[in-house]
Structure formats: structure tokens, C-alpha cells
Image (tube, rainbow, N blue to C red; front, side, top):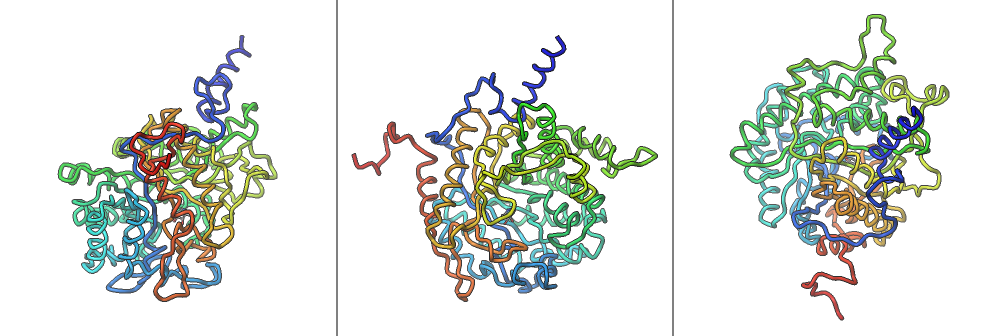
Length: 517
Ligand code: NOJ
């Protein structure tokens, strides 16, 4: 009897974590290619971020950001490259509009530079030149029939705030709220989609845990938790501000973009691997999503594991606690779910050797050994393995854990493989990932309402500089004009957008004018 109960419980856990793995699952796991056209309102787009494309790092009143400082310091970025000019979108934004129109995208996701708009957040003074730059871009997008999708914070913290105590100084919450207010009030009329933060996991872990990203601080045991706590509060402030002051006028949607792998059990018939996969997911996407989308608080498993790894005598934990009123304030601060997804990890309980190999703190607290299947195809980004079914897995995870909230995939894409305009691997990758998304939407009823390729053009890939290229368009960084040239994948993606997915060639839509027979 007990064995039977255990089996039933296990199959429930397996099917919610890894819906394709359970044999008694009602949904069919569809192998191979699945023809299907997305629902009418589904939106297709491409994405960029201010620091990665704009250049003009110190023009027209913009102040220094932590990524300006980090890249200028030397020693952190491949070939010591900088983003001082990058794609020069600050001057060449009209060229960006041209290629967006060429692709036929429905939305364009880009970020605002805080240090361009409010160069000194401690005084709060607004830099009109910065505002004008974005006004030009946004109104030109609207004229072209493209919805702007605006991220407020994509990693480029004004250096002044870093020097002022960073995310550890709670005055940043009001400073961030003020910045959000400036953005909502100036651009809200035109902007339907807002994102408060891009990938807070990367901000906190890569920036302040392992220190690989700006500002390069290595405090893996404490700072990621503390800073994430503040970031979640900033997010909630911005959402409430929009909800009360701007929604009645502009009726847009505000969310946050979370990055996550799909976490699959290494061996799906082992309950401990299934549990490890669930724990890894709760520690990564759940860290931010559980407070916002579920109950205002961190996932219970995360609270338990950080607590037991804190080893305190007084029962305190390195994971901070929200007060009851904070929980109420944070819970429900979303209008959709922004998802950045690229790859998958395999999970099993961590053994002692693995624990000894990871930095003490967040990664060790999770007690999960994360690996990749050596058979998976690699890309030139170390984190990015080609595992298309993970897209379907993570969308189902969101469906089951976050009440089938509407999801916009705000980033997905891959690095160049052969460095030519004939980027067939990118086409293979994006085609397979969109196809798994199609299965998630049309077979599994995942409420996915949009998809966005990272990135429209080659740009500054953080510590990899220009050595890793994600673009649908090639940019020649040696040419002062920075021409944007379509790769094969750009032309191909244009077709997917025009077709609204993958129409079945045997049963084409009646109005398909491109058919020759
Ligand atoms: C995630 C980040 O949001 C973006 O800035 C980065 O360039 C891409 N992933 C590719 O690594």
C-alpha cells in the first residue's frame, strides 16, 4: 500500500516537473516536427539591451554605469573590448528601425539606460537628452507598427548607485521607483509592454556572487540573497506605481523577465533526481517567481535548504525574510511572465565532491549536482547547449507552477557557429525551439503569447565582448558605419513571422498566396 502511494506521488511529481516523462500522462509527447500556426494575437519579436548596442557611453549627459567601469578597467572582457561604440544605436537607431521593418516583427524589446535618463539618481534630475533619444525611438517604432517592449533595467546600474551601497542600500528602492516613474510618465502613452528587470538571477549571482560580471564582487554566500531581496521590492514598487497611477490612463502590462534553464532529472525514474530537479527550479526561477506569482514569499524548499546550510546556532538564515506586509505588497505584481530561455540542465543530488567544487553559498545551498548530457550539441557560449525540448518543459513548468500565467518568451537564441552569413545552426536552433513552444501552446495548452529572438543583431556580449555573436543581422564592428547585414537566419525568421508559425504544407491556410500549386 505504502509502495503504491509512493508510486502515485512520484508520478504526480514527475509529471509536474517533467511533463513529457510520465508514461500515464494524458498529453502525448510529440516527437519530431509539429506543424501549427500560433493563435491570432501571438506576438513575434527580437530583442536587445541598451548597454549592448547603444554606444555613446558618455554623450549628452549620460553618466557612467557599472558596465562602463568594468569594461574600462581592463582584464574582465575578452580582448579588453568595450561597448563605447558597439552597434552605435544611439546614433544609428534609424538603421535599427529599418531592419525591424524588414523582418516584419510585431514587437521590439530593448532596454532604457538608467544613467542616460537619470544620470545621478541621488538627485533624481532628469536628463532631457536621454529622454528625447528614447522618445524618438519609441515614436518611430509606433509609426512603423511595431510595439515597443521596454525593459527598465538590463544590468547597467549607474556607478553612482554602486558606490552608494548598491542594492544593499535600501534607498535604491525609492531611486528605482523614481526612475520607473520618469519612464512611465514620458513613454507610457506609447508602451504596452514593460519589464522591470532583466534576469535578476544573473544580476545578483554573476555580479555579486561569482563576480564574473560587473561590478565583479565575489560574495556568493550572502550578497545574491540580500540584493535579490531588494530587487524584488523594487520590482513590486514599480508594478504598483504603474497599477495605480498609469494603468488607468495607458492600460499596459508590467512584468519581470526571469532567466531559467529547464531542470530535468538526470534519471527520471529516480525519485531523488526528480526531487533535485524540482529543487533546482525553485532555487533559480522560483527564487523570484514564487514571491511574485505565488504568495509573496520564497519557495519553502529554498527557505529550508538555505536555512540548513547557514549553520547558525540561533536559527537565522542567510536568506532574508519578507515581513507580512511586504509579502502582501509583492504577491501578484505581474501582468504576464517574461521568460528568457536558452538551455537545459540535468539534476541529481549533490555529492560531497560536487559540493566542494562549487562556491559556498547559493549553489551549495541548493545541494543539486547540475550537469549537461555530453551528447547535447554545444554552442560557442559555455552555458548554451542545444536542447529544444527544454523549451516545452519550462513552459509546462510555468503552466503548472504559476497558474498558467500568460508567458512572453523575451529571449531565445544562439551564438554563431561558423562566423558566416549562412548561419544554418542558428536556423536549426530557433526553428526547433519555436517548434517546441508551438507544441507547448497547441498541445499542452500553455498560455504562451509571444516569442522574441535574442538578438536582432550582433552586439556586445558582456564579458565575451564581440567574440560571441547572437545576431540575425551581422554587424561589422571595424566599419565606422556599422552596417547591419541580414544573415540567412534573418531571412528565415521573417518567413516564420509572415506565416505566423509553421503552417502544415498539406493543409495550408486558404489565403496562402505564396503557394505555386
Ligand atoms: C541573456 C541576457 O539578457 C542578454 O543580455 C545576453 O546577451 C543573452 N542572454 C545572451 O547571452
